[in-house]
Image 1: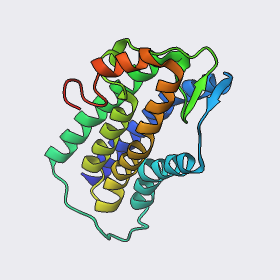
Image 2: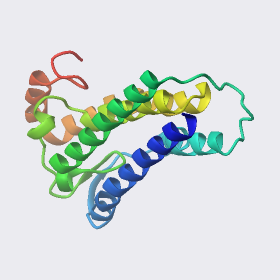
Image 3: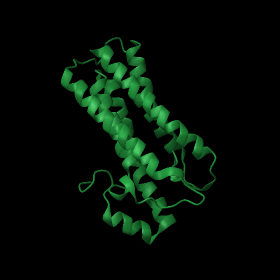
Image 4: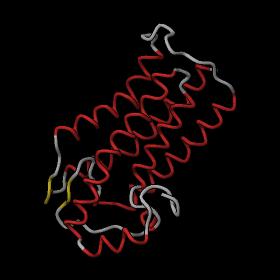
Length: 193
C-alpha cells in the first residue's frame, strides 16, 4: 500500500505543478507596484518546498532508512485522497478567482484589484487553506512521521508569519474596502475561522 499511496501523492504534486505553472508565467510578466518580500518569506517558501515535495521523495528513495515510518491502512489512504481532492479543487478555484492579482510573495501588482468573489466571498485566504489541505493529504498518504508531517508543519509556519503581514499590506492598499471585506469573511474556514 505504501507504493500506491506514494504514487497518489506524486500525482497530486504533478497536478499542483500543472496548475501553478501558468500562474507563475503570468505573474512574471506583470509589474509589481508594492514589494514587501523579506528573506524570511523566501526562507519559509523554501521550507514549504522542502516539506511538501523534497522530503517525501527523499523518504521514498530510502534516505530515512525506515526511521519514523508508521503503518498505513486503507482509511488513511482514503482520507488522503479526499483531502488531496479538496486541496486541488480549492487551489485551482483560488487561482481562477484571483486571476492576474496573484503573487507567490507579498506583492501588489500594478492595477491590482481586491478580489471578493468566488471562494474569496467566503474566506480571505483560500490559497493558504488549500495548502493546509495539501499538508493534511500528505500526512495521510506518506506513512512516515517526518516526511508525512513536514509539509503541514511548513505551511503552518508560513501562514503564521505571513497572514498578518499580507492583511496589513492589503489594508494599506485598499483601506476601508478591505476592512469591510474582513468584517464579512473569515480567514480560512467559512463561518468558523
